[in-house]
Image 1 (tube, rainbow, N blue to C red):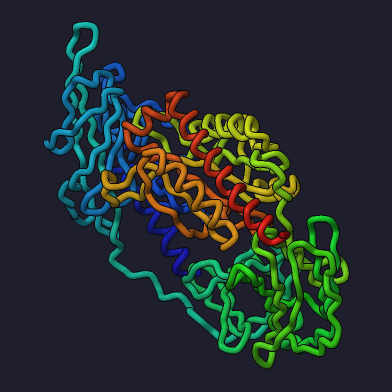
Image 2 (image 1 turned 180 degrees about the vertical axis):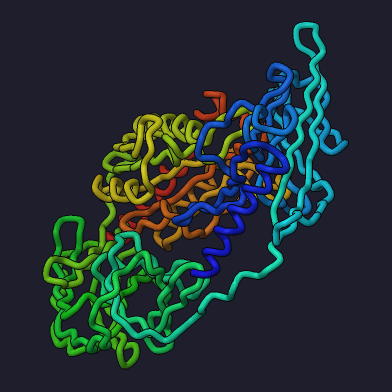
Length: 556
């Protein structure tokens, strides 16, 4: 908590310094803040439209990085941004005359025929000096942009200076309390809660609301996190915002699991497990023919398993005791019919594990396949903005419209998460896809890079997946897109909010790098969007063809 207060004091001091020394009002630099909920693949993006920042009647526009409008700056064209960037940084924007000359810090920068430009330059020298009457020092660095062009027979000249500034307090903030033993019971209250494998660490488990946890300690630093022992030597960490502290601090008793009940309801195979309390659990697919449900704080007295007879997707259920307090149920599944899984607690507190069967593919078309198409971002969330001002949210929606048309022509039922420029939370997109009983979830995006990364080596498309059962779809899409000749930036396993849904194959497609002038120019062309949409449709068709072949092989 003390560290947080120190950061807030530092932020206030920095804004005071910038206001007093450089300008009368300043916008915070948002370029280095990672995006929450797994969508942090693009840093340096904006959630509002760019303010007018042109000089000389629109001759030069800097899209990124951005400071305040020029009328608040010390000199026309100046911007002030909080924070000193890395030794080298990228900048992007556009000019009125693409045949003109552009220089940044004295180095010539190429201009795309469409007017867009992307530059990778060395940061200017950092100057540091003490502040009179204050216990801090200020550091500043500047990047200077100069442009000369022509318009309607008149010469255009524009200059822009971007000033970076931060402070170094003389007195270090007090150390946070750190980890202390604090045994208590917790209840998960957030449906989007996450257990991490360490602190700091990546997301590892996703306990549904109502899950009861027993913590043995708490790290009360800048963010309060609880240490939660699971199985033998296995530890999870969960942030305080996801849980409610219960009055009872006694360890929960190890519960006995005495039976498992399987049942079939059309394409859903439900497995019901009676629990005395809502224990933490994990679902994993270690192999194509196996799915494992692990319950922590449980022992077996499982002398009855009602098998889901007649299920196309589950052959058999078997239990095992992993260690003295960890119980596991293994479902042996048919790979061709396996579509995904979901798990939740019912009103009695029983754990209901649902294993979803894929649709039966009878023909070579996509008839009978339900595809939820998600245009990323939207509304107040602009995300990345291209050099000539094209917001990613707009490019995503235009591509989604083209993809929907291609998939519908191939026979699929397409349900978009949004059809207009509206704001939609990540969790709402996932909930919508599940409510629509999606067979496939496609989230469409356009890429950018974090500040400090040299941008010119990364081009084209990447496809991201999280669960094993989504990899065949991701691979088919990536092969179709890159096989058509479009550059590939990788088939990637990544923990992203729209790749994490487990109830169906879910993938996130980054179709192009919107920060590159040439790729942004293509995104404005309807013909290019139709090409990308056709490649995506071909990838989905290939995935369905392969699934159909496995289904027929299994059933013959």
